[in-house]
Every structure is written in structure tokens, then in C-alpha cells.
Image 1 (cartoon, one colour):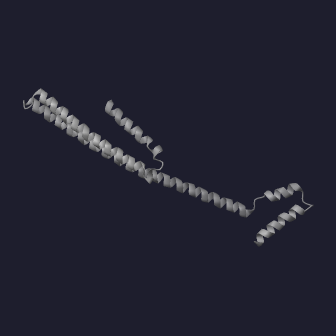
Image 2: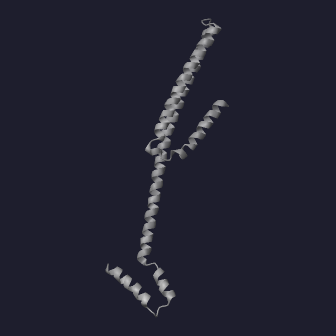
Length: 166
């Protein structure tokens, strides 16, 4: 407090000093002391460190989100691929039964249609599970910024869909 009083006394003295020009008085008032410069430097270092820590937290959360998202997508694709492989095997089995005379063409078509419906249902169930898992992930605390993070996955999904169409 003694230091403050001295500063105030110096300021008041400067205001009452008839010998010092107004220009010098203003310059002296606006001159940053060493203490102020050190405080500013420390504050800038602290703010920079906080900004870096915030960025690290955000990137860590993004990495966790991305990893979990990829696990969900991989599980979906694995299950869907398994269902499609099983469907391929079943359709070949039905074709062989048709060739061996165990099925008539009508029976073959009915069995194949029935099987396709079953596979579609399994794939739709797998897709529903995927959507539920994604919804759960996107509503988690780790996914606060997930809206922007989903863009690469949308591109991957589009490429996957395009690959299936092409």
C-alpha cells in the first residue's frame, strides 16, 4: 500500500508540477512500468498455455470420437458383409438344388425371395443398431463438436455407397 501511495503522490505531484510540460506529464502517465510489462508477459504466456491446453483437449476428444465412430462403422460393415456373404452362399446352394432337380424354378424363386427378405431384415437390423450407437455417441460428452467431425465419415459413407452402385 505504501507503494501505491507513493505512485499516487508521484502522479499528484506531477499534476501540480508547473515545471513539467503537459506533454511530458502525459508521457509519464502512459509509460508502462517494468512491473506492468512483466504482468502482461505472464498473462500472455498463461493465455497461450490455456489456449494450447484447450486445443489439446479438443483434439483428444476428437480422437476418441473418431476411434469410437470408426469402431461403430467397422462393426456395421463387418456384420453387413457377413450377411451378404451368407446370402451369396445360400443363393449358390439354392441354385445347386435347382440344378440337381431338388427344386422347381418356382420353388427356387420363392426360396430365393424368402431368403433375400431375411437378409434385408438382418441388414436393416444391423443398420438400426448402427444408428442407435451413433446417436448414443453423438449425444455423449466427448462428442461436443461432433457435427464438424462427422464430415469425413459422410465422405467415406458416400464413397462406400458409390462403390456399391458403381
